[in-house]
Length: 205
Image 1 (cartoon, one colour):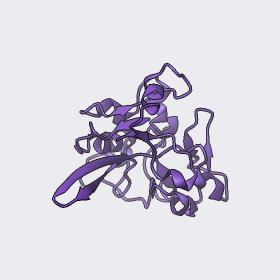
Image 2: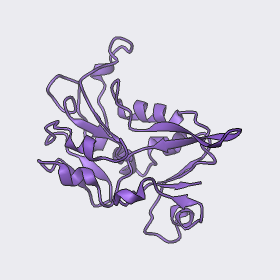
Image 3: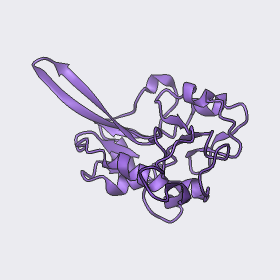
Image 4: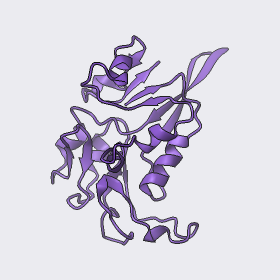
């Protein structure tokens, strides 16, 4: 994924689309937009930095998981097996991007009729009604680039709904793809490269 920071207007439509698509509970947001002020007074401007999971090539979250619940699949996406996750939260501590959340079992049921009855499509698996002590409640959750949508040939929800067309999604191994050409641009950079995780989300200054 490539995100053009000059096009991001900070509307948070990616955050809302992600919550709606993945039915995430209160306190769990896979896509957040971080606001940062750059420059020195009086020449100060605000930059919006969307932050999904970086889907790292060398993910620190994978190496610390004691039960191998977190792994990198054949498509290069870092996945959590909710049925194996024991909720120890080591991976939350290990992630340098703060891209993981713990599902404490909270619900929007008081504000949204039938919220707990609608199935979450995450990871292509219908999890069913939310119940205490049953995955994904009590496990760690994160962005998976909407794997269930990718399997249908669709883009991640955040990419599809971005009103500024700031997000691009594609195959980085294809030199002719849009994302490959954008990554080759001199404006491209990655967050916290010094952490050695080799993130697969690139930004354009």
